[in-house]
Length: 344
Ligand code: DAH
Image 1 (cartoon, rainbow, N blue to C red):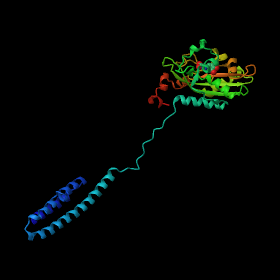
Image 2 (image 1 turned 90 degrees about the horizontal axis):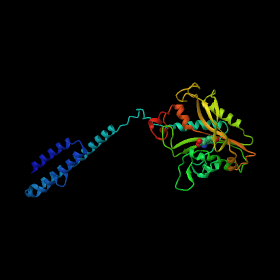
Image 3 (image 1 turned 180 degrees about the vertical axis):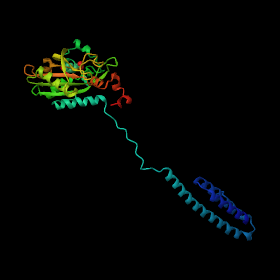
Image 4 (image 1 turned 120 degrees about the vertical axis):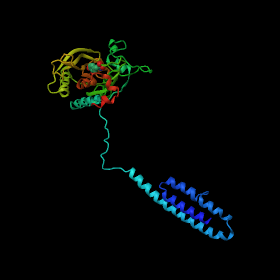
């Protein structure tokens, strides 16, 4: 029995020295020192020994148990230290490596154009007025001199809502009425503003037309404002936007809310007026509708048209952006395709 005990000790020590992982160590412990382990089994066998051998065996067995327990503790420490060193090594961070660059967002091409417009108009003394995108039918049409059955309403297919009289604005012009009523102080104060923002039309989406688009409306109201003020202001805007030499021309047109009404062309900034694919060989690009504010509209804004006059204009920044960047499909603007957006 005593011999068996010594053999068991030698084997257990050899096995323990071969253990290199926590898992293997736990297995060794169960097998050797556990409730049904080798040491316990030996100690249980003490009863089958002749009485005179029992004391010596018991003493030795206790020594063996103590030695193995101590060996186990040492081994455990060693393995823990090794495993920690290994983890530190594999999880090591090389702080000298260059970091991954954070990807920055960019400004949408429309936003870039809108900001340029705003800058130029601000330099020319025009403040920004943000009017609402959800409008009422009256303000969007009727107060702009388009009564319910006016044929001009056909030009603007409208998104109606389930609430009677509530629509999405089809142009930024209704903001004229709101601004005149808010800032005109009952038709006693002059106004000089631009009204940028999104507009909505229930249209067939094609390469050239979308159901949403920006407009930049302009409005100046004062005493003695004349058509020449409109022409000079627009011409100055064109020079600042398209370059010192930019030429503009004015064509007679019709809008219900202006009288007289005009459309403004700028000499094609891509071919210098010689004619190219972009200007369809006309040499001119349309940049704005405009006109003198119709007396009815002035009156609806609270002004007495006998004393006050004004000019207004409406521009489409998406069209300009398309021309500037040679974009041939307006649907790219709101499709949120990064391959398109990242080019700007
Ligand atoms: N509201 C017009 C449209 O959506 C654009 C426009 C034309 C605005 C002439 C104006 C203007 O202020 O004077 O087509």
